[in-house]
Structure formats: structure tokens, C-alpha cells
Length: 399
Image 1 (cartoon, rainbow, N blue to C red):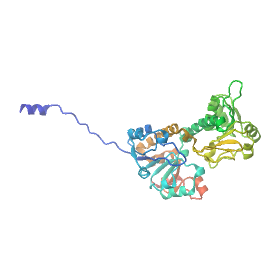
Image 2 (cartoon, one colour; image 1 turned 90 degrees about the horizontal axis):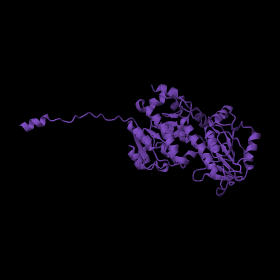
Image 3 (cartoon, rainbow, N blue to C red; image 1 turned 45 degrees about the vertical axis):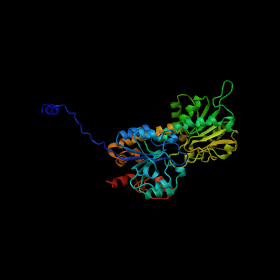
Image 4 (tube, rainbow, N blue to C red; image 1 turned 135 degrees about the vertical axis):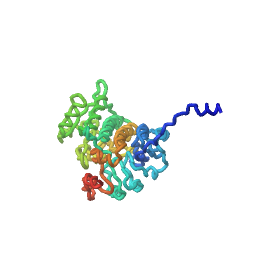
């Protein structure tokens, strides 16, 4: 009896109530299959953060391998690994580093949210019509805006990578064994450096200029926007050779250039052609053109889209590099950069939900081009002769 009393009187461990963690919505990360796309929309560290906040993340097996992220890393971060496209496409929100194919759109479902690049030069009307038929709400990464800072964050960070990479690529292509002139970009004592001409004075040009100067090259920048030229000089922190795009002066500089970089960005539609074929034909044999503007059509008349598998072609004895997704060349860095931006956006949807976030966040709304079966981008409506509707009107009608 005494033993029984002692047993009942002994201290019992306190059991705390554990409330199940609320799960917000499911995010799908499919494996990319087109355009030699090596990036992935979320890196493992981003998955870890989102899972910790209650999101469910589906990652297709092998999705991160080209960016050197293993399935094990994703699993350790809390992602659920799935074995097929069909499974990952059941997610409420899809994040892609490349646009979906027509076959992938067929796997989508109504009220699903897609966040991916749109890549205007390769866009077909059928792509838009299928998204509309599926009633998918699609956001173009290129048009998502940070209203507080007045920038397009994903465009900016990819432009930084493209500008740095363009100079590294040019330095490599100038080598004798690559068919170039055999010129060292920075020169050495007693031997002048290579001359680099940059057309455009935006973010790509800024980071290309920094990199080229750091390697010792001679740099000259052309743009018709005086404010951009002034801003670039201030950002670089030194006096630079800058000029408006005067045809005669630009032609003189291109004929003596070792490297020419096209870094013109169009706010709407195709990039204007700045350099005609006649000028390219008269450039130095073995010189290099890097047309970063190729994702909007290119600013050299001789440019045509190439791929990471076959990145260059030679025309008029000038080497052309015209890969539209240059940041995919350094996939791990680019993936982490995209992840950081998307994670901060998705965390804002933690309490509001993705559609309420789109409603409240004007920068996200700026990226929407289809909304629940309606085209909302006026430019695409004009281009493909499809009726477009103002997004604000559609959102208002939802309430």
C-alpha cells in the first residue's frame, strides 16, 4: 500500500500541448528540360527557410543537379522529392527558371500560380492561349518590380551576372585556340590592352565595365541616355570614355575594337538594331561580339540566337556569342540569386496567401500577364491580337 502511495505521489513529466504547424500552400520545383537551362528556381537554403515557415515544397528528383545541388540536400532541407513532372505540377504555386513548354502547360490546373521568365522573342500565341484555357495566373520574373527601390530585382541581379560573364567570355574567345586574335584583354607592359566597346549604359554595361577595367582593358561606352552615362561613371567611380550613339563615331570605334558588347535593353518589344551588317563585315578579323541583348532580338544585325551547347558562330571573320540565358552558364550563383529574391516575396504571402499578396503588392501585379483565364498584358494583347483586360478590374470583380 505504501509503495502504491509513493508511486502516485511521484513527479510526473508535464506534457505540453503541441499545435500542428500550419501549412500555407504547396510550391513545386520541376526539373528544367529546355534551352540548356541549368538554373533552379529555389536553392536548398531557400527551401529550408520556406519549410520552416510552414510551406510544403515539392522538388522533382534531379531538379538541382545542373546547379550542383543534390537530391539529398533538398531532402535534408525539408523538401518532398517526387519522381515525375505530373506530381510536381500538382502544386499550387510553380517556380521555374525557364518558361514552361506547351506540354508542361497541359499538366497545369485552374487557379494555379506560375512564376517563370517569359522570354518575349521566343513567345508564341499558342503559349498564351493554353495558359488562358487552363485559367493559370502567370507572372513574368522579368517584370516583377520592387516598388520601394524602383528596380526589377530579378532582371537586375541577372544583368549583373551577364555583365561580368560577358567580359570573361570575351577574354576567352580572344584566345588564339578559340579563333580569336590572340589578344590578352588587359595587355602587358609595352603592349596595349584590348579595346572593349559597350553599347548601352544599364546594369549589364556597369558590371561589364567594372570587370573589363579590373582586367586592364580599354573601355568605351555608348548610350543615348545621358543620365545613364552619368550614373555609370558615378557608380564606377572614375572618368570613362562615354558617348551618345553617334553613327559615325560608333562606327569608327567598332572598326578598331577587339570586343563589342550589345547591352541595350528595351522596355517594350524588340531591341533596336544599332549595328548593321556592313559595319560587322569591316570589323577586325578575330574580334568578338557578345550580344547580351539577344533575348530581346539583339542589337547587331548579324546576331542570331545560340545555345550553351553551341554558343558561338563566326560571320565575316567575327566571332559571335549570342546565348540568351547567359546567367545559366554560372548556374549555382544565378540560382542562389533568384532564390533570395523569390524567398523574400513568398514569405510575404505567409499570412496573406498568394492571391491576396498579388492584390496588395503592386510590384507583383506588374509581373502578371494572365489572370484566371484572362490576358492582362496590353503589349501581348496587341502583339497576338488577343483581348486583354486591366488586372485591377479583374481583381476588383473578385471581391
